[in-house]
Length: 222
Length: 222
Image 1 (tube, each protein chain N blue to C red):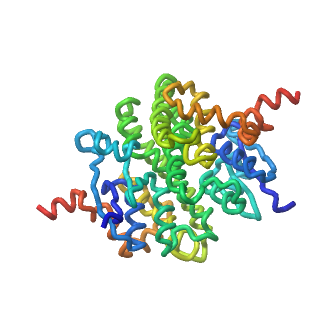
Image 2 (image 1 turned 90 degrees about the horizontal axis):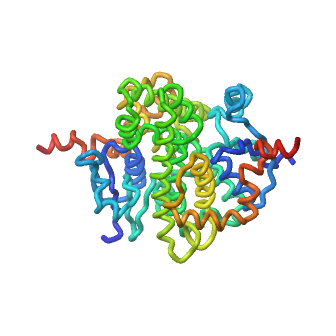
Image 3 (image 1 turned 180 degrees about the vertical axis):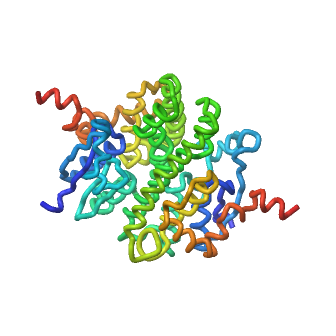
């Protein structure tokens, strides 16, 4: 039981969401440990959590006494130890990582909690400017993702003929886009991918609303 | 000769710099094609370049008729086809990717040309606010990198006993930190890594000042 994977996660964190889909897709049992990113200044900033993960972020995955951080690193680790189904099939690996990185380094970092907080407080940002900022960067990045996914004409998936890591980045990013009221109509292929994935068990189980720390679940349990 | 790698690069782009170090480290011959990111609105935004790379960014690497984008994808591709020396040795792979991603998705996206341009023009940013923004995000990210590298007590490198992809992200990020006048004194281990790398041929050859499109080289050739 000591080898059971532990996932430190926040229901609404899109990077944690990626890992949850992977774990359900690969049918890897895991223990879910919620880290509330906004309550009392953010539990990720507590001394206790920073001892575990000095980066003060989620996701953080524990396996065999290893502490793993950063979703791209965690996904490749999981794919190495549980190879099936493959998230980064060899013949498409570079194209998959490239698409994932458009989101991972091109969109998410510009719309995460830390950056929004900084813009609001230290950058004297007004709500209108912040909404424009979010909309600009999400649309800008999703345009590149849409173009890349459209190159895959013979398949409804983003790259190749099956789900890969690409969908694990696309679905949580669409969730964020909707959260920030970004119009998704310019991205028909991504909407097609969303439609396809939303009926699949791993994507349903990994959805923010289904996590034990989501307000939706708390209300159900009251 | 058709299989010779082509690298679309800009001398000062830290993401291109990562790829150049890898190519020299692995002794892979390549053709350097400069893309000027600021001249006449940026050559990366020309219709011709966007036909090749719709993401309108550098680096972009061409090999065997494949167009590869995003430095993390390109580095893993190069490591697969030219395995020696290994940038992501198997036993340390997750830790290496994790460290690289702190820079790739945690620092670089917040201080690249596109974001600085947006802050200056659309976000009514004053120079003082922009300087504070740069300094905050670079120092914040480098603190995490420094902590992670310090865990590797028995070696002067960031992870393990040799150069890995970690140094390919650290050295260009230090170059950027200096460019933006960030005080590096809080990061002694990173300075040690810099001191070690700066005397090595691949790092010297890949340095921005040594590229054909650097103003330094143009002046020498006049």
